[in-house]
Amino acid sequence: MKRLTLLLFYCAASAAPSARADEAAIMAVLRAGCTADAQRLCAGVQPGGGRILVCLKEHKDSLSDQCKQAAQHAATMSGNPQSAAPTASQSSTNTATMAPGSNAMPGSGAASSVTAAMSGSQAAASAPSTLATPAAEARSSSGTKHGPVAASAGSGIYVRLKKAQISYAAVAGVPEPQPGIEMLIPTAWEFNSAIRMNTGKGGCICDRFSVSWEAKSGDGKTKFAGIPNYSWKYSDDRQEMQNLTDPKFRERNGANQPCPVSQPLNAEQYFRQDVLNNLKPTMTLVSIEPFPTLEQLVRQHNGLPPSNGGAGANGGTRVEAIRARLEYQLDDEPMEAWFTVALVTQINRVGRGYLYDLHAVGQMAFGAPKGQLDANDKLFKVMIASVQPTPQYAAFTNEWLAKYYQVHADVANFATQTYLHMSANAQRVSDQGFRATDQNIRDVQTFRDPSTGRKFELSNQYGHAWLNGANEYVMSDDPNFNPNSQLSGNWSELQTVPP
Image 1 (cartoon, one colour):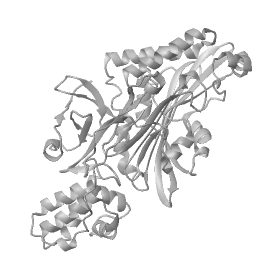
Image 2 (cartoon, rainbow, N blue to C red; image 1 turned 180 degrees about the horizontal axis):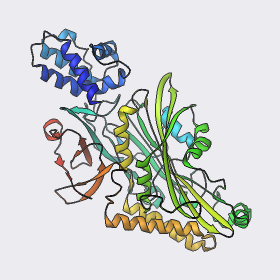
Image 3 (cartoon, rainbow, N blue to C red; image 1 turned 30 degrees about the vertical axis):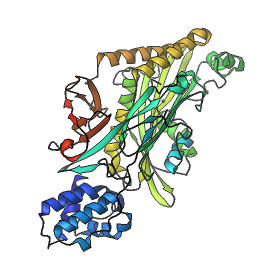
Image 4 (cartoon, helix red, strand yellow; image 1 turned 120 degrees about the vertical axis):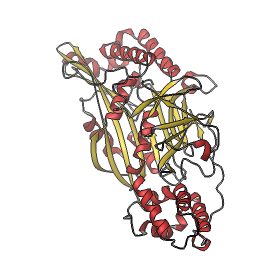
C-alpha cells in the first residue's frame, strides 16, 4: 500500500510541471486526502505514467468529499485551480452508535446471518441502539466513508479507531448497559450488535448466549460481522450414542433444542458442508487457508495451551482455525469476503469409545469491494485481535452455566467438566497476564498507558498507538507521526513493553 501511495503521488506531482508551490507540500495534501479513493476506485490500474491520476479524474463524480477538497487545495497550491475535481459541500458530522454480546471467542453459526451482513441488511437488526460513541469528524482521519480506512501519515499509514461494546444487559435483566464484548472498529463506522439467549442455531447449553454484530463503513460496502457459535456432539460408543439421540434423555437435558448430533468434522469440512452451501447470495469459494491468528486467540480465550500437544483421536482438546476467501455479486458489483472459523473439538473417553464435543467459534466475515480485500487485511486483523469478552461478562456467563449444571446434575458429563475447567483456566491466564510465546502468532503486542500504568494487548499490525479520553485509539506505522499535530483531541502515546 505504501508503494501504491508513493506511485500515486509521484504521478500527481509529475502531471503538474507548472506547479509553483513546493512539490512535497502538494504531495502531502493529496496523500492525506486521496489514498483511500485510489485504492477504492483504481485498484486494478497499473501504477506509473500518470494512469492512477487519470483514473481518479475519470471517477471525479465518485470521489469522496475529502479527496475533492484535497484536490482543490492542491490545485490552488499549484496555481491551477481549474484542474481540480469539483469540491463537494462539507459532509455533516456522523455519530455512530453501539447497541446491546460468552466467554468463548464470539463468532458465527448461522450462515444466513453472515450473508445478510454482506448483502446489506442488519446483522443484528432488532438490537436497540443504546450506547453512544464519540462523534466521528466530518473528514474523519480514519478514512472516508467510501473505502479503506487507513489514511496517510507522512511516509506511513494510520488508522483511527473507537471501542465498540456489546451490552449483555438484556440477558442479565438490568436496565443499564453492561459491556460484554469489546472490540475496535474505525471511528466513522456504524455498529449494531446484540447478545440474546436461546436464539442460536443449535441448542447446546454452551451456546445459550448468542453474540452477533455488524460494523460497516458509511457506504455499507466494507463490513465486519460476527454470528453466534454453533456446537454439536457425537459418540462412537453405542450406548452413549443412544443416550444422545434418545428423546427422553434429550428432554432431561433441560432444553427445548438439545445439542444436535452429527459426525465430527474438521474446520474445512464444517465450512464446506454447513456454511458454504447456505450462503446467500451464492458465493464462490476461491481458497481456504490455515488462520493461526484466530487459532491462538481462541486458545487464549479458552485457557488452552499454544498448541494441540498430545491432543488427538484418543482424547484432549484440539483447535483448528481457517479462513475462506469468497467472491460474490452485490447489486451487480463484484465483492470479496473472508470467512473465518475455529473448530474446538473436545474428546473424552466414554464406555467403549469416545464422546466428541464440537464447537464452531470465531466465525466472522469481512467483506469489501473486489480489489480492496487485501488492502484492508491489516484492518481486518486489528479488529479480530481486539474482540474480547469483558471480565464481568465472563463471570456472568460462567455463574449462569454453573448454576444450570448444579440443577441438572444428571446431565453433567465429561464435556461439561471440560468446559468449566477451560473457563477457570482462562481466568487464571487472564489474571497472570499475557503469554509472550504466542503474541506474534496472535498478531498482538503489549502496550502500556503511562498515565495509569495499565497494560493491554493491541494489534501488532501498526507499531505505534495513542489513546484519548473518549475510548478512541490511533495506530500508525510511522515513527514520526503525532496525532496531536494532525487530529483533534488530546492523544497520549502508549508505550510498547514486554508482556
